[in-house]
Length: 302
Image (spheres, rainbow, N blue to C red):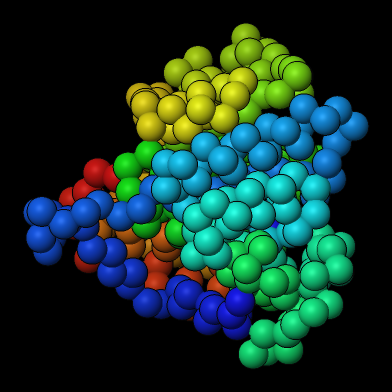
């Protein structure tokens, strides 16, 4: 999972306005590719894991790909971040870390300075920009939001890690399966680290807990270049669900949300609202969803 002050929290009521080259100027450059990297705050026993983190950072920097990550300065997290910053500068990296994890996922550089809200943050010149947020839900939402606003080839890569890395990886894959986003999800399988996960996916298909077509939602690579290419060439599963399929009914929802299809809106609006909802439904989310499901129109494709 993880210089400037903490960024304000995105409002669940605000409609994201994401401009694309075709909307404003067809000759304009597309948005920068953004990759969210999930990985451990430890370096691992085998040096190949740290080397892979370093290689991924170098490959991303050479392709001018922006990094969004969990904001830690130790282990694989810190290695990816400082590698990119050393090549492309602080603006290429945005770390997002919950307040509760600051004391666990940091090195001594966190003690050097504080942001505008009094949170300790690492040196921007070493690790890039850091935002301290209130909780894990906000961290996940903000990381996903940056990837969704990125250009073609943006997505999620998991290096080796522990429970936190696996939880983030599988949640992101689940969001894809539900049709909430269409970005690629890739595991960088170093020294067979993810062989067990890949075998579990095969077993889940065999036992019919997972559609065969969705087994490829998580793609794999064994080196940094391969992982970036896997996101660039990512193919959306035809077996996955869509938000229309998962429209919440008043009979099944404890919040009494209206039944029926989710109305037409721009993809960023629908995607971010859905991610807000799954991450941590608030009163504002409930009110927004009720308004959106009222007078529903034919839904757009994601």
